[in-house]
Length: 312
Image (cartoon, rainbow, N blue to C red; front, side, top):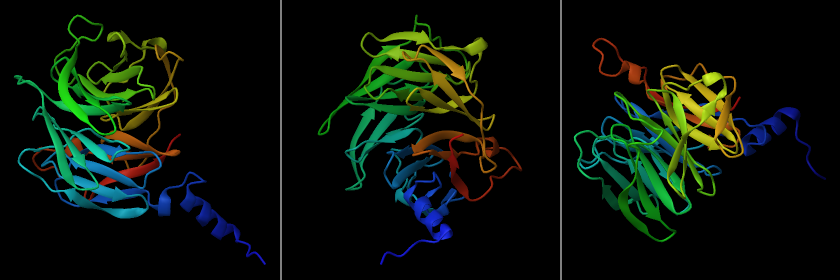
């Protein structure tokens, strides 16, 4: 005879399986050890139980497990990696980490916990390697200080060298003073890249085949100023506006050339959010607390966290 579940037990079971769109184990916030983490990037494959978060202070990389509140130090800080900004992990368990002002990208084997490759961009008076997206055959890295988009070829078994793939000089994407390109996303087929320019709030579409750059026209001339991390889910682009403490959904046209802003949403747990990763109908949101960094008499709220919130 089959045992029937009570309504409460059924709810718990469905939640644990993700059917109800509830966080695994009921955990709505993950904690990062340390008093000066100021995290920025997050890497997670939708469907995996594991995620990675980086500290901008010393480059520590943490590993978390969905449903388990506490994360752990996975890669301790090393001198060569003084900071960890944007990151992505691929199906081959390779973790790509943008190194900010170091001008380097680090690639790690998360199974063997080893450094696979350090990729160094050309020397520059100002650089800040910020975010990464993965296409079927490459990794693309934004630089918030110099108008270059970097590329690393990749296959299931190999990694290429880093190249200055696209110079934005003379294109529709004009670099200005301040923080420029930030978040980057790509279509599943790798045909298009989408980037956000934080200081202007503009979105751009890059066609990989011919390297053409076009501004994505938003309804009513709208912008997503302070746009940080972005995530593409089908035709919906989610943009984290860090200082505004909101996430803005943008419905994009079939060719990703135009977009309509939806209703922004937030959560009481957000603390100057920077970037996001997706797990089903939920988002893992990194709380950087950059507004509390380096200010005399101002201290961050401890512990540093990653929020798990529903997509609205």
